[in-house]
Image 1 (cartoon, protein in one colour):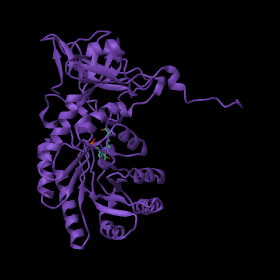
Image 2 (cartoon, protein in one colour; image 1 turned 180 degrees about the horizontal axis):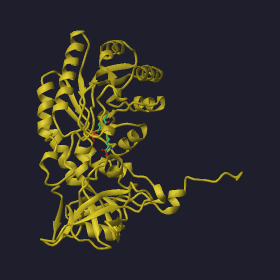
Image 3 (cartoon, protein in one colour; image 1 turned 180 degrees about the vertical axis):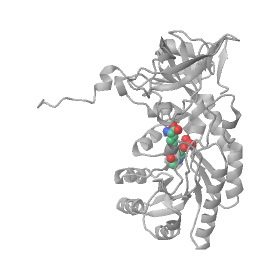
Length: 423
Ligand code: LLP
C-alpha cells in the first residue's frame, strides 16, 4: 500500500491528493496507482525469471483500458475470458502472442475470433469445446494453439463462490480423461497442443494447495511425455491471495517470490514455458473506491454511516462477505476514539452493507472515505442497479492524474433502450 499514504493529513495516491480528485470528478470514483500496478507485475515477473515465463494479467479483475495499457507496455501478457475482453486487450496494446483465453463456455463465434487473431493459447475446458475449435480452425485454414485445463481436484480454503479446482466445480477436464484426450488432440488437424493448464481458485492465502496442484501437473507432464506426447507449456492459473486487512498478520497471503520459487522448483529445467494468470495480486491493492458520507443516521441501537457508494459500485462485501478496509481521507487526530458504525450505501436492499459495527474515527457528513484493496473485482463487477451511473475511474502516476473512464450522463445510460412503436 506504499503508494496510498497520508501527506499533510490527507490521503494521497502517489503524489495526488484524493481530496483534489474528488473535487474534480465528484464522488464516488475509483482511483488506481500506476506505480503499484507496475510494481506488482514486476515482482511476479521477477519471481519467475529463472525460467521461460509469461505473466498474463487476468483482466477480469480490472479491464480499464488505461490499466491494461500500463501492463501491456510493461511487457505483460493477458488472460481473457470472452471475445469482449480479447477485443479490449488488443485495443489496449497487448500483442496477440501474449494473450491466453480461458473460460468454460466459449462460443463458436468467440473461438473463431480467437483463432483469427492468432492468440498465444486457448485453454480448452471440455471435449466438445475441442471438437468445435478443431472445426472452426479447419474452416479458417489455421491451427489453434491450445492447452487443456485440467481439474486437479484440489480443495482450497476460500469463499465457496470462488473455489474452482474440485471435481464438483464446473471448471477443467477430469483428471482421468486428460491423457486420451491429449493424445487424440495431438493428431487433429487444426489443433496444436501446447500443454496443460490449471486454476484452483482465487484469494488463496496458503501455498499448500498450489504445491498439490503443481505436483499433479508435473506428474501429468511426465506421463504425457512418457507416452511420446509433446508438452511445451504449463499454465498455472491465478489465485494468489492478498492482504485485505492492515495489521493482521495471519491474512497476508503468500509472497510472490515464494510462489515463484515453488513454480520453479516444480517446472524449471523441463523445457517448459511457465505461464501464470494473476489478477487480484496485480490490481487489488493498486486501487481504491472513494466515497462521501451523505448522512450519519443514528438508530436506536446503531449508528449508520450512509455513503454515496453502494453495492452496485462495489459488490464484494454483499456477494462474498468480503472485508475492505475503510480509511478516512482526512487523517484522524492521534488518539481520536474509534466508534462503531454500520457502513451502508443508498441502494434499497439490506444487503447494501459494506461493514457492520466497524470501528472508525469520528466522521461527519460530507467527509470522504476510501475503500482499500478495491482495484480488483471492483469497477468490473459494478452495475447501474437503482439507476445509478457507473462511477468514474482515475489513473494516477506521480503527480499526474487522468480520468480514464468518465461518468456517463443519464442520457447515455438510457441511450440503448427504446420503446416499441406498438406500445
Ligand atoms: N485464471 C482463471 C482461469 C480464473 O478463473 C481467475 C479468476 C484468474 C485466473 C484470476 O484469479 P486471481 O489471481 O484474481 O485470484 N470476483 C471474485 C473473484 C473471482 C475470480 C474468478 N477467477 C472476487 O471478487 O473475489
